[in-house]
View 1: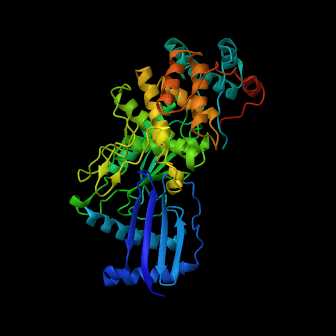
View 2: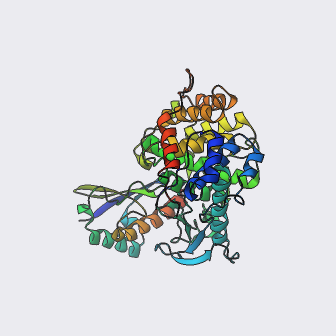
View 3: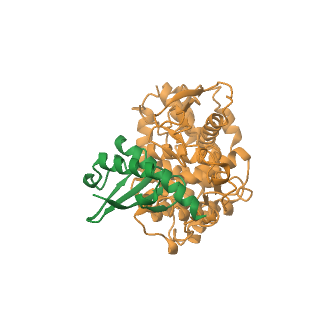
Amino acid sequence: MKVERITFERTGGFAGMHNVVNINPDDLPEEQAQALLKLLDELDFDKLPEQAMNNPSLPDQFTYRITVETKDGEHSIVTGDASAPEEMQELIQMLNRIARKQAQKKK
Amino acid sequence: MHKHSGINCFLPPHILKNIATKGTESQKTLAIDTLKISAQMRGQRQALADFSAATFRVAVGGKDRIVYDAKNGSGLPGTIARREGEPATTDVTVNEAYDGSGTTYDLFNDVYKRNSIDGSGMRIDSTVHYRTGYDNAFWNGEQMVYGDGDENLPVDERLFNRFTIALDIVGHELTHGVTQFEAKLSYFQQPGALNESMSDVFGSLVKQYQLAQTATEADWIIGAGLLTENVNGVGIRSMKAPGTAYDDPVLGKDPQPAHMKDYVDTISDNGGVHINSGIPNRAFYVTAVELGGFAWEKAGQIWYVTLKDRLTANSKFQDCANLTYQVAGELFGAGGIEQQAVQKGWAEVGLTVGGGGPPPPEPGGCLAALLRLLGAAPSRS
């Protein structure tokens, strides 16, 4: 299924700042887009439970909402930072890197 | 591991002195702690000297810190970088975590007679250099963790410096540990915002204590120095003027309200725990400035006792307002300037307290404390 858009929202953290970015895989460098889609595929993203967090009450951890849209619909999950399942850490870190780059461009 | 809870009411000093000289070791310890706190609250320096540790050696460990280095990985705690008593390293981040947790320990120990995070001398562990490009610090339930900010980006693109750079951030994280052992405020909506506010209050007090600043001299900024010069902002939060800490094209604007009328209803950020904390933060600031002098003395004492003995997991802002008002009356006298200052602090943010006099002390609590002293006092080993 072709991924049309990924929305990555980060809240909380010590600073409590709110960041949202929309990512279209077609706009990413080829290599990064492929790595990202591969990660989503390996995680079986559209079958992940909506609450994918081990412990929502860890003080100052980041909270993430990741939404993946295809032409057939969308799937959204909420996860934490330190408390995210280990297999999701790579996805979260990659999305953070992309988000950071996009935020910088806004300036 | 048990939690040493002290004696939370005022037994007559002559009874405490008897226990301090004639009781068992654990009874002595409890009685001495109580005498010290009572003496300190009343400003009786002589009484403090009379019950110095030289006379009654308190048999518990003191300050004990370890700073670990995650070496940019995510494994915790990482490799030991500096242990208690070891000289400074060449790594400024390690030293900041070490010194910052030491100053935080000192504030809680010297001023509030609390021996570390759990009140029983728990070792204070910190990990620095967590991951790469990690714009955060947190308390994971057992230790503090610090990222290096945007160290992996070119200098002109960096927004955040290392998170150990501000002493109040260290104090903030460590206070999350104290809250975990005491009020256990749930990390959601108003109880969560109180949890956050307590961390900002004692984080700021740690900094003020180190700088020996009065309430009017302090900047009341949380995270001063954390934002780089590429950002238009003085820090992450302002306790004095919530909502004014930063306003930047990339980071956006500080979203904190300073009054209940601007309370933010949201599901993000665990129900706005880092947003609505601006309201109780400002209540503390107003109380402290109203009282003048060093904020950690009276205002800090009132908030500390409230955190330790009164707030519970589901407490809301109004509860905190009522309880700080009660505690101010109990510690310093009903209707006194302290209670009036607390009342004014909460009024400034739109919460009303007082009206009648403070409620009478709880005989159950005192009786329980006395029984604990005379019979079932837990050992402190």
